[in-house]
Amino acid sequence: MRRFAPLSAAALFPSLVSLSLALLTLAFLALAFLALAFLAIPATAVHAASAPCKPGSGVKLRGKDLTGAALPPVMRCADLSGAKLDGVDLTGKDLTGAVLRKASLKEADLGQARLDYADLRGADLSEADLGQMQAKQANLRGAVLTDADAVQAEFPHSDLTGAVLTRAVLTQANLTDAKLVDADLKDATLGQIKGRTADFTRAKLGEAKLGQAHLEHAVLRDADLSEAEFTQAELDGADFHGADVDKASFTQADDVDLTGARGTPENLPDDAVAPGTATEDDAAAEASPFGKDMLGREVSAKGPSAALVLVIVSGLGLSLTLILWGVAHRRRERFVAEMAVARHAAEEDVTRFGEEIDALDFEMKINQVSGPTHEWRAALDAYEAAKQALNVAQTPYDLQAAATAIGRGRQALHVVRSRLSATDGHR
Image (cartoon, rainbow, N blue to C red; front, side, top):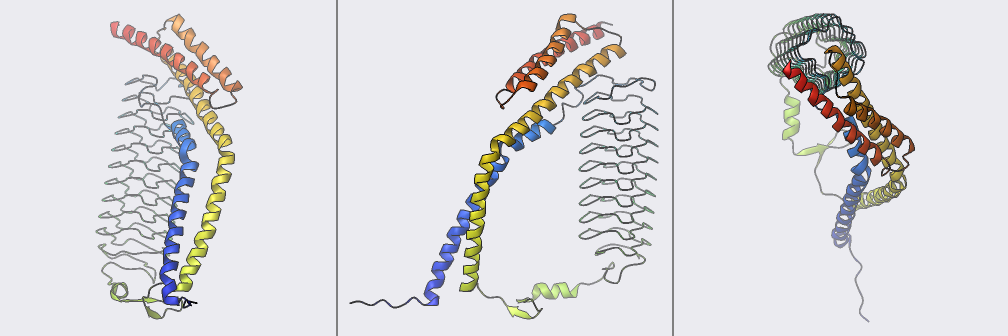
């Protein structure tokens, strides 16, 4: 009888590696499937629900003097280019997607107002009250916010390139991933701001107060930071290359790395990297062919052992089991999730349609004109039909009735608006 020699560890190792690679491939495929199951329809519906209307498609008030007007609470995507709103109370108003290019908002009250996606390029907001204002992804390029009070205002992902914020108060404001290239923030108060990944390239921050500011991975290249205060600021990964930090104070600031900066800063923590400080340890570590174990001892790099491969295989098996369970659980809840998101999107659409009716009604009143009665009544009836369809809907398919009614209503509003524009052109 022929005998077979037992497999050695060396012979077994390639088989284990092949098995681990096969399981890793399966794990990646399962992850991809789970991601598709999780994001497919709900993500699309949520995006559609949150997207703003077309900028400038709302009420037409371009160049109007509205200093004494009683504005409606919802003015989404209104065209207010060049409008005069000095001192106007806009507290809590919904101006999402509104166009306010070169509008005058001096001393206006925009507390808790919503200006997400709004166009405020060149607008004058001097001495305006912007407390808790929401301006996500807004465009404020070249806007003037001198002496503005923007405590707890929200500007995440907004563009403030070239904006003038001299002496502005932005305490606890959210500037996450905001673009402030060439912005003027001299003597501004930026205490406790959220400025992670914000871009302050070439910004003027002389004498600015940035105490307890969160500036992790912020870009401050070539910025003027002379005499600025960074007391207890979080600066992990912040880029100061080319920045002027002369007489800037970093008392108790964390993770200060001023590599490439210019000038002589003050009150640097003991573990800070001052301008011009060499980092020989880092260079030596990069050049070393050795790694380090858990005790800090240098060890040479070696390939994975059989035991390590077995641990990886076990971990992948457990991961695959959990992933498959997650996919099955997701399937069971998918209908409920889809219906909830679809209903939310439909409710948002019905609400927007009602806001469009209110905005057009306000426009007709302020311009002292009237629209065609038949189409106006058709729009109102369509709004009521959409609300009724929404109330009785049980499935995503049932919600189509609401969408159809809104479509008819918007066509009627378009006719009303077209006739109003024609009347206005004949005046």
